[in-house]
Amino acid sequence: MTEGRSSTSPEVRFASVAGLTVRHLDNEAIVFDPLSWDAHVLNPAALAVLELLQERARSEAEIVSFLLDVLLAEEQPQAASHARRLLEDLKSLGLIRSDQDCPVANR
Image (cartoon, rainbow, N blue to C red; front, side, top):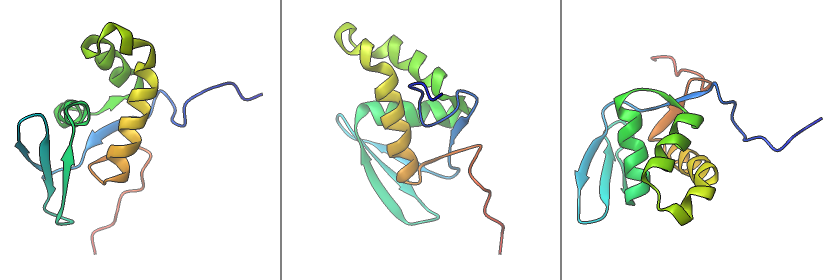
């Protein structure tokens, strides 16, 4: 039986990749990854989650809790979907990884 659960287990933890450089602009930030030489412009929500994950690894549930504290009241019902989307987006950009990701061997 499959119930409506997220694509990740609540026990999965996410963390920022090491070495990112963040330059703050007005309402956005540019994040540079010196390993890939990729630069990305992040909106305030994505930046807030990335900065939280730079402090220490956190679960999706912890990200949802963080968003509940910072979102406007009318946005709070969508906190879980916002968290999931932000984590997926940051992961697809290569800015974060989960503890389920296979470590890359040094070659």
